[in-house]
Image (cartoon, rainbow, N blue to C red; front, side, top):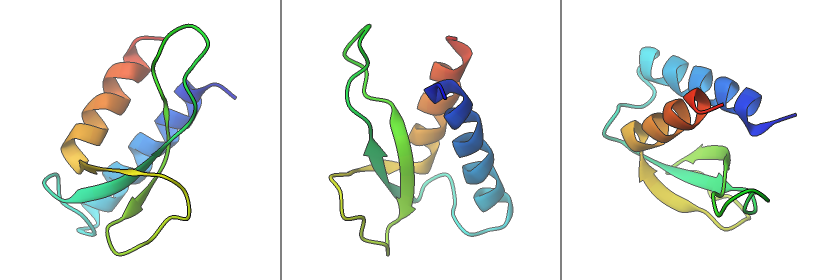
Length: 78
């Protein structure tokens, strides 16, 4: 499965969380990334967690709106 199809699922999940009032665009998420792709240095987003969750893998904190922007822009590049 390409990360593009995964991105559609992540976009839908984050959008549903915003619509449900679970998070806002200015909240922060813990973002987990995959290894760099072979074609460039981009590390695709593989998952996200709410700030009160503690993933057992390396993550970075990002604002929800920035995560959505990256997902949408990268998804449009396919």
